[in-house]
Length: 228
Image (tube, rainbow, N blue to C red; front, side, top):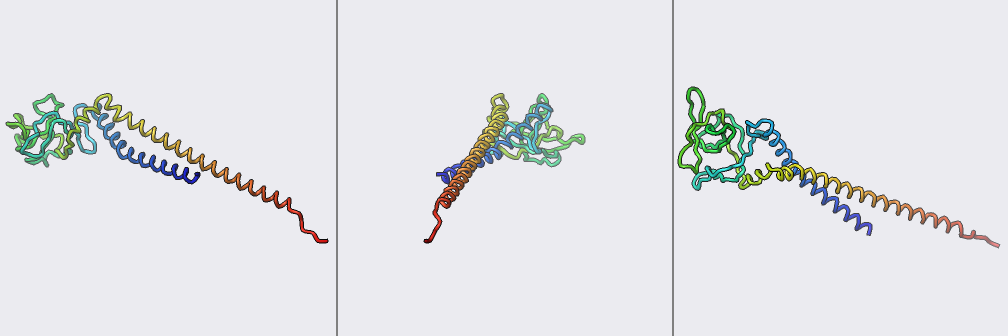
């Protein structure tokens, strides 16, 4: 019975360890990335928050959702752009940029159809692949945010949720609670297993002590051999 109990405890500890590793792998990066992006968005509202040179952004329109051209980017997708020097941008690249016709904070992601210079300044002519016409105003190089690298379908809806109060709870509070809960459970399991091992050892020592005392009593009670 004690042997089986130890096996169960070991299995339980291994299961908790695996759960802890999974939580670390999934939640720690998510927590770090989201905290970094949230802090940057509040510190500098005029820049797109980045992490390691990459900019995650939520797609709000279908201007790049062409049936015939790649990449096909849909409303509600989450895209990742990489910060790049404007001189490295080429025709055919998909770039994210501050809209020169916008309010200074709106970001657009369109394909580059022309790269040109005017009065020594570098500009990009862009077009949404799902739009009938090119963008009216050329994009100055200084408006470049990054070059499109990756699309995660529908993840933008999740990202929008994470920007709400319930989302912050799920993104920041919940991971912390899970880590604390995991640590408490793991510690209790460890303490319980340690106590059971200690009790088993004490019981074994008590049994050995009792056995020794019985042998000593038996030895004292044996009559000595005598001859007449």
